Length: 136
Image (cartoon, rainbow, N blue to C red; front, side):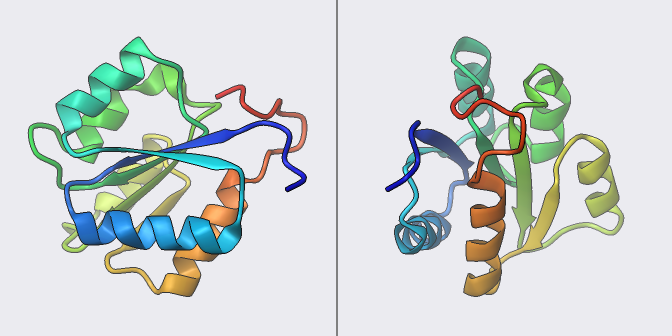
């Protein structure tokens, strides 16, 4: 492993199958990444307000107690350095533009093609030029 600092991916999703898919993709990438999973939008907000911002935030659009839109609106202080991906199995019309306007870099349909998920995670978990690893 050439990475010097552990990166953090915070997955906010209540579907265990989606969490397993992310775990498999991270294992394939063999990156130095800690996966933290939260199953509820309110708990994610509390974690992000009380702790450090993760390097990557992967959020299901439809979460118990708080949607991805509400979470992103409440977390504007985390962006940057946190990079954001939102995904959904049933996105309402026009939501992708709203999500991207709130700071997400990528919107994925669920279930994503596995290869697409691997590519997105790889691109977004690699340190950005000029950014300090682990600064998120």
